Amino acid sequence: MKRLLLAFCTAALFFGLVGSAMAVPVTWTDTKDFDPDILIPPTYSYWHDISDDGFSSWWTGGNDTIDSFSLEVGLYDDNTNDTTSVYKVVGYWWIFPIWDWVTVTTPDGTESAKISFGLESHAYTFTNGSETYTGNVWGTLDIWHDGTLNVLVSSDFGDFYLDSSTLTVNGDNGTAPVPEPATLLLLGSGLLGLAGFRKKIGK
Image (cartoon, rainbow, N blue to C red; front, side, top):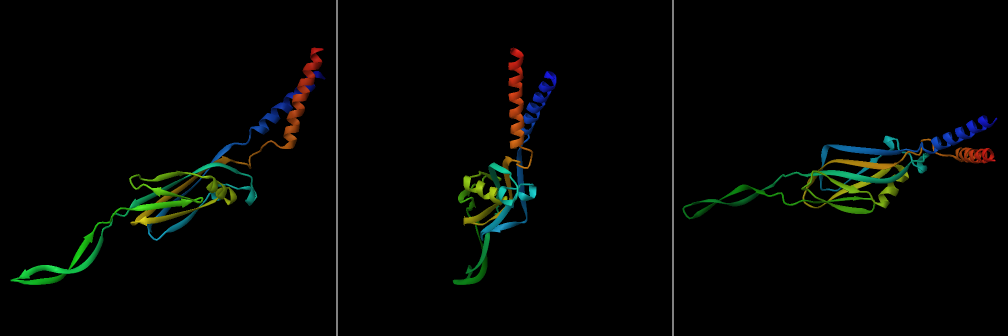
C-alpha cells in the first residue's frame, strides 16, 4: 500500500512538472520583398501580419503573448540625376550669340528618410544596407492586438527606393499546454502526499 501511494504521489509530481514546462518561447516573422521596389516620395504605407505565421492573440481567439519585436527596413538611393532642358548660348557667329536648347544634368542630392510605426518615427541612415529598429511598447500592443503592425515610410527630402522589410516578434505560444487549475491541484496533491508519506515513515 505504501509503495502504491508513493508511486501515485511521484506520478502526480512528474505530470505536474511536465505540464508546467510545456509553454515554449516562439518567434514569428513576416518579410516583405517589394517587387518592383517602391519609389518614395510619395509616402508609402504597408502592413506586417504575423497571423499568417501562426500568431493568435486573445482578441482573435488565441492566447499567444508578445515580449518584444524588431523591424528591419531596407532602403537605397536611386542615384538618378535629374535632367532638364534650358535655352542658352552655345556659341558665337562673329559677335552674335547662338542660342539653342541644351540638356542639363543636376546632381541627385542627399536623401533623408523617416520610418514610422508604433507612434514613433526613426531617421534612416543610407550609409547602411538596412536599418533595424527595436520595438516600442505601443508597437508591441499594436501587434498583440491582432498580429499586425502598420509601417509608414516617408521622405524629408530626396528620393529613394523601398526594397524590403522584415518584422521579427518574440513571445510565447499560448496554444501549447500550460498549467491549468487541475494540473496545479494534481501537483499540489502529489507534494502533500509525498510530505505526508515521509512523515509517516519517520515515525
